[in-house]
Length: 250
Image 1: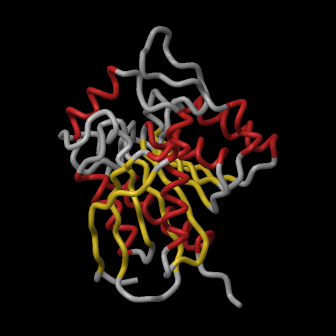
Image 2: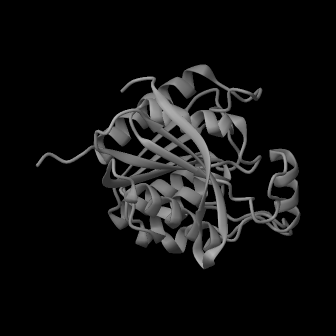
């Protein structure tokens, strides 16, 4: 690990031939390493998310965050882009999976890749990280308080997606889940349901729930930020990806 890295905005080809903007951060050097796809939260492809991408590069990974709102609002500020996508009903699941696939393929094609790629998301991105891990061949997944992995969305909400209960049998990667005990979506009951379902299915997973923490406790730029929970969560993410994305010994 080191603090020398490069970061840039790139464009890659998404499913269907669409152009997809993404933020790429890479550590210096030519050592082989794993990759991480970072899925941004509903507030958008913002500075806080890009800081997370750079943090994964500092941890030794090639990291890439797709701008999921690029098609609807190219060049728009994160808040405006988020509002546009919310009004349109959110990012379709099928398109999300295609975008994550494009990012994983890009990372695996880099000359530094060891072939292993993980995914992480917060808020809506937490659910989308689980969806991606149920749909694609990934090596690790982290769900940070993803709403509606289990539980039913409120009636009439234009952006609330269906839950993923019926897809969990297809989960292809070990899952780390980080949650706040004061959260409402997902609530402790939703987390318990997910834990029980994955246990029944024999899917490897590790969950941690934090006292005095609600939704978005990782968000350093919001009142919901909780230092102790976020610091412990980062330590667990670091250890989890080190276990599952490390270069395998010859």
